[in-house]
Length: 129
Image (tube, rainbow, N blue to C red; front, top):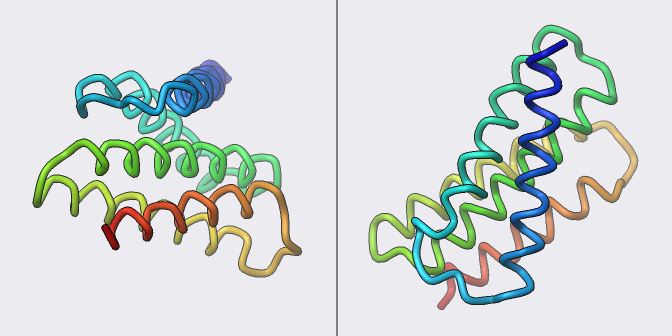
């Protein structure tokens, strides 16, 4: 139960960081995004374990939200990173979005899936520039 709470706190922290950085639109450096990236990564790890042990819809939703926040952080990091590092962050964002799609492959459309697809689309636009 304690690990689950850590995952939820990290996921909420990552969401707050996404909103903060979205409001600024001035990400500056990968280092500036460290709190977003670290909290989202921790949440992803926690909820991946939860889904593997308790495959319930609530766990999938929590995991998908954490994956989307991770993808968002990776896309932002790709915008300020250079060369190969940028490509690596974009690949991580794509992988996270794909994981969300797999989680909800047999489910009706949802806001959680829509947000992941939006982040994935923005990441593809970044790759095009």
